[in-house]
Image 1 (cartoon, rainbow, N blue to C red):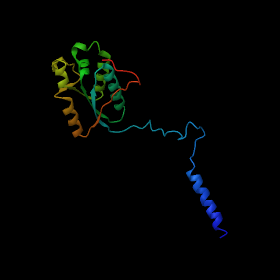
Image 2: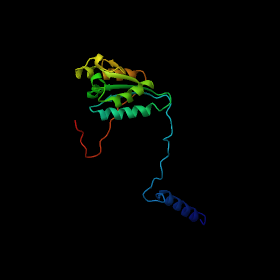
Image 3: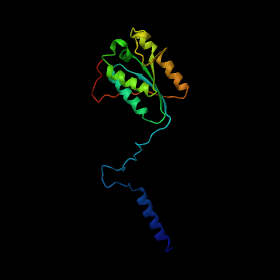
Amino acid sequence: MRYVLPLLGAALLTAATASTPVYAENAFEPYGTAVDHSHIKYDGLKVVMDAGGSTPADTAFQTMVAERIMQMPHAKLIMVIQGPVIRIFSKDEYIQHQGLVQRVAALRKKGVQIEFCGNSVRAAKLKPSDMIGIGTVVPGAYPALAEAERHGYALIKPMRLLPPGKVMKR
């Protein structure tokens, strides 16, 4: 009996300290610091990007995402451009959007496959011959995305987010 009470006391003390939250030295950091894996390079990514949007800023954001994907070793990327932004890649609008087109052309030189949605081309009252020569006009964006997925590509749709309270102007 004389050993039971100390053991019971030790057990209660252990249980009490185990249920007590552990706080960092700084009360604003109760969970400590995140583990930094930002240097990791994912090898062999296969990505198909649904690059649809309504403004050049949408395409610029998606191009930035594509540039970051292509920093990964042995990455493969298909960029399917669709929607109103298709006009950016028409010969008539090349001068107006030259900087953005050159960024996408640089991606093509790095091995990115650029595809223009044929439905979007027609909806913009353009013909395949009106498009600049950095991409291929495919029948439609969604069949092209599905075909890439069938070949093991992971689908992403990067969308830029507006700050709270901001409304997108069209």
